[in-house]
Image (cartoon, rainbow, N blue to C red; front, side, top):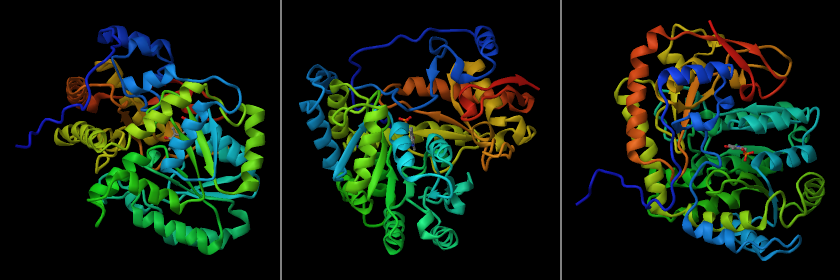
Length: 457
Ligand SMILES: *Cc1c(COP(=O)(O)O)cnc(C)c1O
């Protein structure tokens, strides 16, 4: 007998209370912080779907590993456990620990970026793009056309457009492309996976032109699960095998350990090139720490080493992917436009389609995210023109999509929490025709979505 309820494959071991609030209280809270959901006090959030980054619950084995943390400055056994766990999945020669993924990006692009350089990806994540642009290099997104169409059912909407990649290499010149990146899964493009076939093809193009190929591998396990589920000939493989095959295609990676490694903090840069690794380690010592701990405590390294063994479990990944789809499919069935197929770590609501009466530069995604908070205390994240609209030259251009991301923290919420989210979304769907846009009244020079202030129009 196969039962239809997807039970969480864990029991609750320790709890964090949620404080209940009313809609009128929440309307005041959000107004007080200039309608920026990042500025809310998280005690005033009921269901926090702002991000899946570092917000997951660790297992009791991870907490036990924390107790084994060895805080030796150099050569700690916790470092060796961490390094072995990373190399068990990603057998790169050099593993450089950092406090977060963006620190790995900052180090890598300080070493290889710079004016005149062009760095293609399927879609750069916001911190990746910001770090590339900060180095004066140009970040180019080359996801396939299907990846920009929220309703398209292509199984691997994170794939790179191979023709566009080769064209870019020819037009820009190999000497100006220090690296080709691939984000798995494609976070900014809807959490969509990349196929193994596409990874092989991008790797082959990079080899043909002798350009290094790096993974932004934050959600490698979720991506590998999608490959197992959706790609011909993969359904009998172990996820760990698929992950190792992906790693072998690349010359290096940047990583946030706050995602699939099931940690609350951490990241790493990994690579095979000895010369580049030496430059990166020097930068690491300047800004993060000694090469055997990076920006992390020994106990963090231990927790991540355990997380890396747990995340490739098929029971965990089946639950993870199916429970995200449970939310997404429910919204789809009630008529809320969502990015299809449902991605791995989040459900993305298509605010442009839900709120066609709000122009892109009045930020329909921001308007929707604010309403979800007011109506039910749910905190999502705008991924649209607020996040991507301001170009480095100062101009403002609408983003390709206006999305609101409901990211699901790992192993944190139960199905009844998600049923509540579904009910709140049904209420917001009723209110949709009367929602209004917003204007930005205060804006920082970069990464404006984190700190801008808004006013309703
Ligand atoms: C989160 C994330 C990063 C940055 O990692 P941080 O740990 O938040 O600094 C980079 N790329 C992708 C795809 C991400 O999801």
